[in-house]
Amino acid sequence: MDMDDNLPRKADDPLAQLLRQDLGPLSVADLEARILALEGEIARTRSKIESAVNHKASAEALFKR
Image 1 (spheres, rainbow, N blue to C red):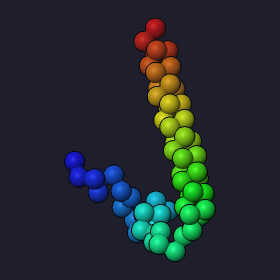
Image 2: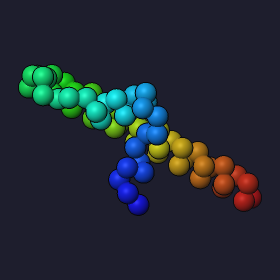
Image 3: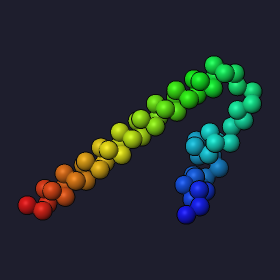
């Protein structure tokens, strides 16, 4: 699997835009704020994944009765 397989397909996708953004003009404070925001988004995404996995497991357990 190529790393590009995980990237968004549309050029106007927000993640694609984020990955292309030039970090050069950003200050250290801007970069730190960006990292905090991205870490928050990672936590939110992981929480959604966990919720989806738990929901699926609950549904499978319900229908196996």
